[in-house]
Amino acid sequence: MAVSQAIPITRHPFANGSYKQMLIDGKWVDAASGKRFESRNPATGELLATVAEGDKEDIDRAVAAARRAFEGPWSKVKPFERQNLLLRLADLVEKNFDELSQLDTLDMGAPLSRTRAYRLRAVGMLRYYAGQTTAIHGETIENSLPGEIFSYTLKEPIGVVGAIIPWNGPLTATIWKIGPAIATGCTVVLKPAEEAPLTSLRIAELAMEAGIPPGVVNVVPGYGETAGAALASHHDVDKVAFTGSHITGQSIIRASAGNLKRVSLELGGKSPDIVFADADLDAAVPGAAMAVFANSGQICSAGTRLFVEQAIYEEFVGRVAEFGKKLQVGNGLDPNVQIGPLVSEQQLERVTGYLDIGQKEGARALAGGGRVTEGALSKGFFVSPTVFAGVQDNMRIAQEEIFGPVISAIAFKDMDELVKRANNTTFGLGSGLWTRDVTKAHAVAKRLRAGSVWVNCYQAMDPAVPFGGYKMSGYGRESGKQHVEEYLNVKAVWIKTA
Image 1 (cartoon, one colour):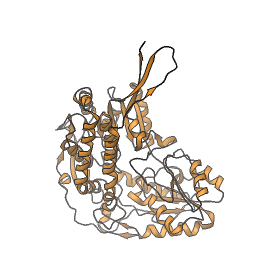
Image 2 (cartoon, helix red, strand yellow):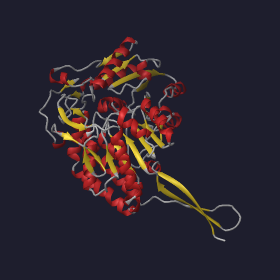
Image 3 (tube, one colour):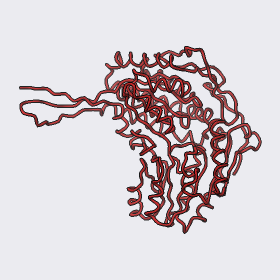
Image 4 (cartoon, helix red, strand yellow):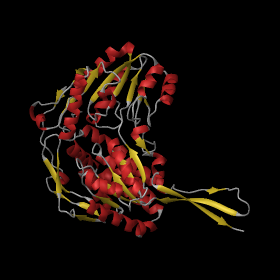
């Protein structure tokens, strides 16, 4: 493992230690309670900003503003106008992309080498939703009732959306929630993660600059147990769109029962990444490694259960471990850094706890296995890329989501046994397989119980292709036309003409 020492921090104007308010009804306001919380750089511990801490009263204000906008001027805005608003926002995101990517790096630690690579994805999503805006339509349906009765359907915006996002990719997560809301004519109250709220607040500024009317996009930072819980249970919220842990997802489902609001959930995973002996190993080694090590393992669909065919197990896992040792760990502002810090001390404690558990369970750490404490990096929340060999299916590191740069390498012999073992998890978000045999690829892909199957690649994503999970990884889809449908109601209209 190569270690990059700390470098001087470039102070972004939105992360210069000043105070940031919340956006409600087109105005920047303090929390009703006057409370604030700190946002700090996980690589150095330095203060980036103090942020207004929203709670139930602020959520009430934001939801009321969203309802007024939804039932008022926003309801009269035509699809072509909503499309233009999204295109203007896309242009502004593209124009300011370097600062947005730097904000993500400062606030949650992902290296610039990663956050800068999201330009096409971030701008592409907004332009995709803009294209979908004018493609929303119902249909005429020939019914079989006697007489002359005409039947058709309307697609209508569901209403006020409560959006709750995690900290592991603030820029794209924010766009993933507000983009389809604007496209369909909904309004939204966004609750960003308390660990990384700054990018969401900056996007809210750009939304106002794009001309999106007051009340359509509201951003209320705060904690999950206060602001998030109030949003999930609010009786005037028509839908909750949530990305995060399955534990929180379950609580949101319970909270939604009050008015039976619609819920879409993109939750956690313990995804299998399968390497057959006939794979192109030169491609599979970095592919399987970065399926976990990217973003310091803080990706819900990371391929953390690495299944390797027995014939190549020792060679392949050893090569992945050597690859991990060569990755450069450090402050994400250094463009040469490949692995940044974990987002918080709490996440550091969680991940290092699992490193201890894995070794106590009998797994062997071929690479990494602990916190990085060298030089200035001791001030940050760094964990070295870790590869555990000798992992058994029943070990906790093979069953529980760690959300850190930790690979659990598991050997397999038989393909039928493999598929059963790969599916033997409560989750079903992502999966991968590496093989030169196209017949095998199709056969295994069909049998894997996961929302995405990547063959000879991992984490490929596009605005037009749906993403979501099976089982405890949630329901509903993001991206693709299915995502837009999540924000629409279908109304049937019957007209007797004679």
